[in-house]
Length: 111
Length: 361
Image 1 (tube, one colour):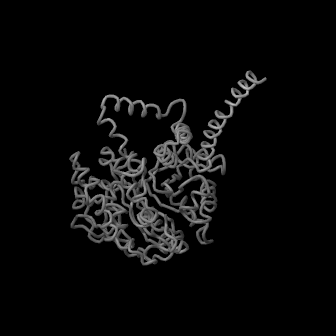
Image 2 (cartoon, chains in turn blue, orange; image 1 turned 135 degrees about the vertical axis):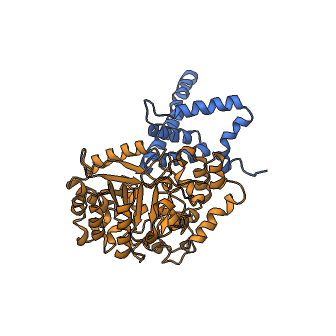
Image 3 (cartoon, chains in turn brown, red; image 1 turned 30 degrees about the vertical axis):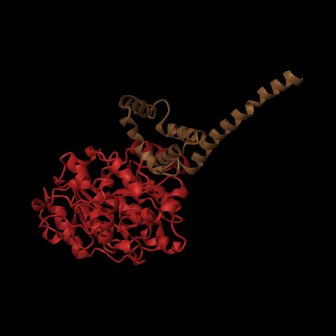
């Protein structure tokens, strides 16, 4: 039994989830593939969004996958870092904006 | 990670051969490509993979492209060079062998002549050969120029005019539209020189819209990953080169790095070898197999030997035919020959496929 929760080699096995639930697995991968097709957004733009979300979700598999995907699409280090900062800004903003709720509560209880 | 005791200066400036690296030996490379994950059954061999779709043995079709490697000498020492080319390589095609090649060009049914190296321009008989070959009237006459050669020495400054005079189709490498990524792969200062050379080619008419003077760029990834979609990359390259440097070109060919020579050395040193082979195998596309370049191309080495492709030439895997040398060239014997394969062939069948002319599927 492995001693860590994450193993980089497991990313390659992602497709195997269909083995235990073929219908749902296939539906998921079909949906996933469709989402990343060129549409109103380019595949390159979608790749950068995915990279940012991979970081906010803190998914090591997704970070590996979309860093490589970005390199394949010619995405530069600067672009990758900027995308991650967008994710980080939303994450920290989402934390801070709840401060308004705290302020409201304080004002109600002790105003 | 590359270990600390490796002298990085040597890595950047010398060929594997000069460094007396183990990997300068083709049989050592072939051994690596056959052992490990391919021997223990973790990944299928290329032979097993193409057998699944009854594509083994892979057979040559009608000859369309003659690719001649006029020598391994080069002014650059690119990190991923599959030729292991560099200034320290002395293998150079003689005029006598070139003469034999000219005879073959005249008599063969090939419509494309493709000169490569090293930097082909460094061969002392290069200009003579181009002048003679241009007279034969072949449909598409390609010279693979690394661009920086044009700016490396005064004696090469007139190359754009020379190419134009002989209606040569120029195909040049450009790993990225940014300085950092280009110089990392091809050496310090390569980006600026390449940009200058492209501007000079544009100035004489190369790469301009509707111009008959063809200028195409070759993109190959700067690291252990596969190339993205060729059309999307072309669009990005065109936009960036136009906006930043007013440079125009015709097409972009996306080429996959094959795991041989210096790229194999890089993959092993950076601990990316297994992952890279997995990527190639997972991206295997049987539709690409039908059009791989070895089925319509012959590669001729600096000393006149015949190979299925430039990669097999570097791995010293000669054609499987009685006609093995340019002096005994026999198109009939070469047609229908079985292509010599190993695991490096996965590089040409991944995704949309890869060849010296870009994607194939």
